Image (cartoon, rainbow, N blue to C red; front, side, top):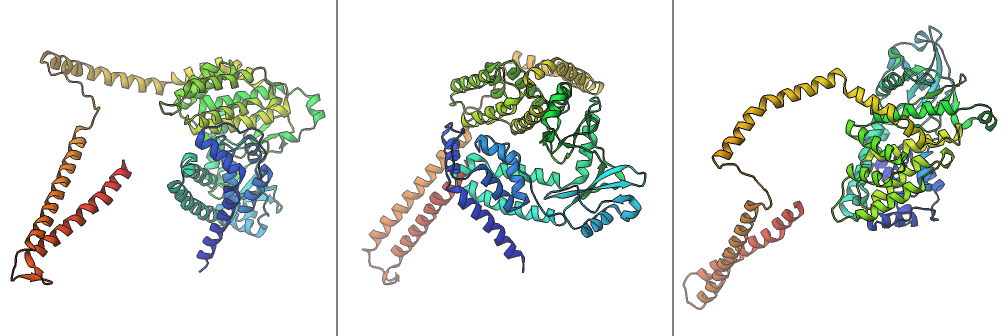
Length: 554
């Protein structure tokens, strides 16, 4: 009996939120930009402030907090100030009572807490919407952090996502704005992210992968999971004592030169993006911590990005073009990886890209320029009708977070110069990766298959040429479809003529006396009238309904 009220409450929350923002200046302005391709994502003053939007999302619950975090990667939807505020969106929730924590841990790991751990703090180190973290020590005295998933949170997420999916499908079906914004695709991405974060076993695997990929960087630390105490709802990992990068005092920043450490951090992220294709996708200041021994710890691997080899090459080319302040090449790379209609004004797009790239020359970390630049490129592409890959939105958010971290450690650090400096090393690594034995053998097998089939194919081609049987098939017009269309038109004209003839014939028979009558009228004439009426109804049904359905499918 409680399902219906819960559903109504979820609908009520979402609809009240949409009623507030659907008619707002913020939505009308961004919707206008999306539909017309106008610029205007600058410093406009809107009725709802970025802080108010963030608070509204917090009040709606954890699913909407995740939605806000996802929207922070969509510069085509929101102005800069809102993107920046959404990027800092964190949830403030009451901690899980220790009694429930105790029960969940013992159920998941299959043994008593007192047997698995030497100590287990009752007060959490941190608490969030999905779970909370407790400090503990193993029997070996090793300090660990234990992350416990909040009870019932998966059910809540799935119910909220089902509600959002229903409403998003309805919006996409009936409104052009929702189709242009691809609300259904945004929701698919949200569902994927949430389901990944709800699987702590997957996060444990992510920690292992990132730790292995970054083991060459001595000043970077990735906490490793304790396999025996990891499940889908409990993640036990090495405890790293640290504090947020942004909490460093200005005096400390003046006393210590963090340039080499920043250089190493940037190189590590370039390696993740371009070489590994496996990236810590949420490097906000809370997830990048400074340890007492002057190292940087990368924590919280619930959200990772995976780039295909082709996308890695595209991103490498894009970063090289940006670091060289080459606007023309930047535009070429963006167009090469995107989809767009032929009627788009590519000359204006190229000029706008070139202007943005030239303006960014000589910028430093304190300008927070690199990530913002990629986001500007994303936005300009969307406004110009250029459909860029979603990976570039993720890249923009990663670089924007990196800018914030680098600006704290070394405000005069030039991220673009560092990218340029590491390009040679990155290219060498990529060539080395591609020359690995497994890649070489794959190429060898493909070459072997090509060589085996070449004689037969060449023989077939030469034989067809000799016999004048060589043909080139060009599918310019679907002849069968055109013929079928003419046949349908002819059939319907014929049926219409038959119906008209039956009506005329029936009208003439009405004047001929007959003993066979229907409703007092000559029976034969009435039969012709009935047959003509049935034929007319059938023909009308085909024209109105079947043709309309075929039109919609096309």
